[in-house]
Length: 355
Image 1: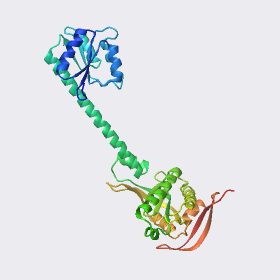
Image 2: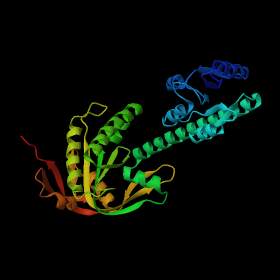
Image 3: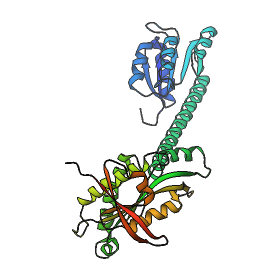
Image 4: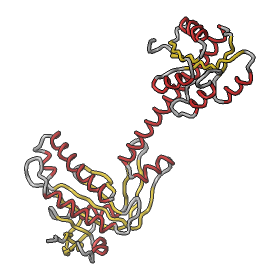
């Protein structure tokens, strides 16, 4: 039996009928398997692939109806097409067989032309069914991959919204916290370190932050060069957004202390946090990106750029949400000059060390 030959299982308790059908089918270049009762046939299809079953109705051990019922109740086997074989005058059994899910019927004695036509029709139907299943599986796989990709790029709730509707997704949040972190001396470093090594190191660092963000239940928004942007309180509102982001920032600082730059120097980062309203939404139709807009984002960025190395600088608005937190201490920093914002009082955030 070759791989391309359709495989037909002939189930008949009459040896003469089995061999008569076998001879006819082999002549038509079909692969043939023989079974002398229903139980034998079912045992065979449990562990072998067949394309069609020619099934006699009246058999000892297990009749054709019982075989049909068993096949159709099994999700793995129900797709096997069955042509029932019966005596020419036995229309009642033919009708019952069709009702139980048989594709077609053949009457004994066999008409060769009819036998060929019905087998070919059933096999073609099976081939189309298999093709359709393969297409559906491929589509399901594509959908799963695209969903996985979307969820890598966008927050899960936003990815789900985007799948359901292609309209613009934008939302106003009255109170969130935004963090920017930036590597000190990165521009200078990039002039002295091999580009591939630098990108690999940056990827390693940001992958660590990604995992920390995920563990803290926060939303990474994006990386911009060597800057890393995280938000709390969206796309699902969190009343304790400032506290969540502040504790994350202190964990970030602790992680930074253990890391060296590619040139062997200790890693230094500036971190800034501000709290306030933002508009959040998805931009792009080919390359999607979930982003934030508004003064809150700009002020958070200024908090970072005016911070001292390896410190967390927060705005007065964030301080107001944190000042009575038992695990955090905030020291004022007066007269901080900020581009486009003038002079402000900011606060340096530290986590209390427990001894």
